[in-house]
Length: 234
Image 1 (spheres, rainbow, N blue to C red):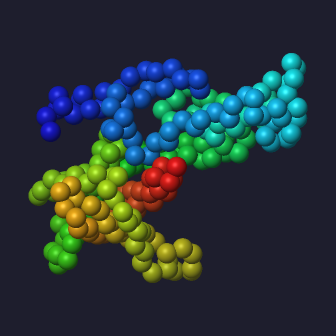
Image 2 (cartoon, rainbow, N blue to C red):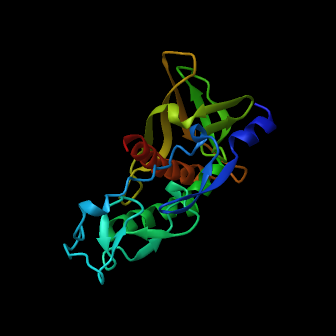
């Protein structure tokens, strides 16, 4: 794909919705696989009372819609304005208390883990049933749509085609605790093929002979998988 075509596909536009300003892809098909669609608002005529505390709406008690779930609340139950990058909002938007907690937890992914994934890490990559792993740098593309592997060869896997993403672990550390993430198994579909391909990532050492970047990348990818499955289920 030429850089000009890629730039057109990644182009974005500013739109105004009832919920606020959003910076969305010009081509909907090329949006982030972690994104969520804006919910339909519960019609005003169907919510005479707050859907949380049951307070009746009147001229003094106004109704507000949560931008994440679309339900109707009073100001007390829907007073927080929280960033919602999964819906591409430019500014923090009003959310109910329950949704605000979820969005705040997701903010860590966008502020920290996403940067780790885009930066990439070194892995030993085994394709299919091959017995010879390749040393490659694995990263998430800037547009979040592809898993990119670079070594002697170059491979790109569409995130939306990944059907299985399983963290591999190794033995318990001395003194007990949780098992350490040592790698990841991926199963994915290939365009034009009916079968399922598989690869295994095993944490490799970086230029400083450290596996910590790979471990951090695996932890970030685990959180990304949860968001990916949520987006598919909506």
